[in-house]
Image (cartoon, rainbow, N blue to C red; front, side, top):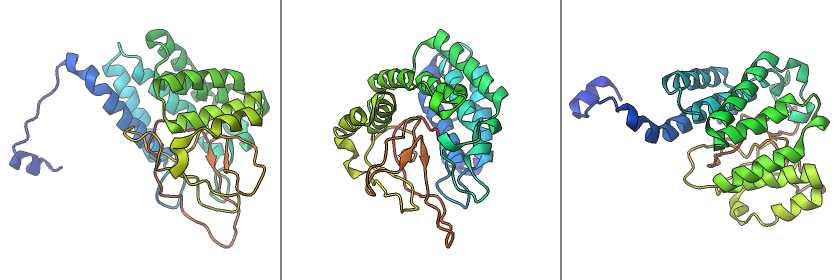
Length: 276
């Protein structure tokens, strides 16, 4: 809103007392992560990635770190964003299509940034314990530290998602947990959990021939983060053409050289680890 309109509306401006900042922090962090999420997986435009938004979100997160050094949540959020952003050069191929996590060239990942993110994860956990952002950052760290996709520590990721479910019992986190269980303990175990996800009835599961990304309108209503269902653990085996196309967090678009579609504009409301 322009300053003139604010003045005309006589909206009072007041800097909150430091004691009041804590109760407003969750909303501020959610907005910063929302900005990052739009940069990480754009919902409009010709590109999947908007680096300007991701970079600005990380800058704002670092600013919150400096302003509130006694709080662990900004540290955890910056860690989460750094770890995801460290892989951005490997996430899109020469044609502008997303590259699955397991297929990314890990030599193109930003190792200094990964190291910085991992250091922040440890600091956030020491300072504030397993908060939701710290848990998501820890999951991202395990993916980032794996030298190969096969070396991913899925059992540890299962434990982290299990703890995250206690704090954020959303359908998106349930889905991520089920997929991680499938990777750690076998597809049957994961599918058993997947079958119990009633809140996901309104989600659209696209088949492998579709270029549209998986989308969801029914997960965790009221949570501040919009996203596609992109997760650290979306790697359930596909046994039929109707199986979901989620694999290691990337909304994969099938190769169709005749056309190039812009990213799906569907939204999914719910906090989830965005790894692709």
